[in-house]
Image (cartoon, rainbow, N blue to C red; front, top):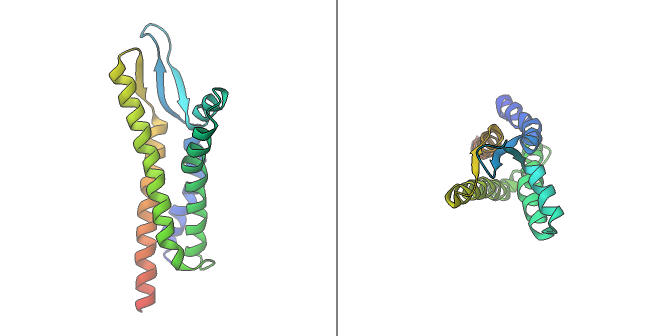
Amino acid sequence: MHKALIAANLCLLVLFPVSWFAPLMRAGLLPLFGLSEISILSGLGSLAEDGEWALVAIVALFALVSPMVKTICLTLIQLSKAPTRLLPALEIAGKLAMADVFLIAVYITLAKGLAVGRVETAWGLWLFTACVLASLAISMLTARAAKAARAA
């Protein structure tokens, strides 16, 4: 497997956890007051405080567990420690993580549409989106490389 793909995938093992702590958005009730920063982990904490355990489980699964399991499995495939037949399942996992980005965008759009307060996107949303897109690209390139290796 190409070393650049392996290196890029290993970077995701660091960048995904950073994106969980990074602010996805800033929200506030009135423009005069400061805005609160909301991250994936702070959002999970708020949901837990409200007793929304099903949502906590779903968000944790798709935003935390799924990307990390996918990245670790992809690394094992790249290092020839796991079979390439796992690649189709990993592509599905990547699409589920992309659904998280879509939902966050929908929440921001809804909040802005209500015009009750103020919502701004923050750098963490861009980081998380970039990690998910990079993971999808790395998966596709890894699948292509594995297919080429089988054909050779």
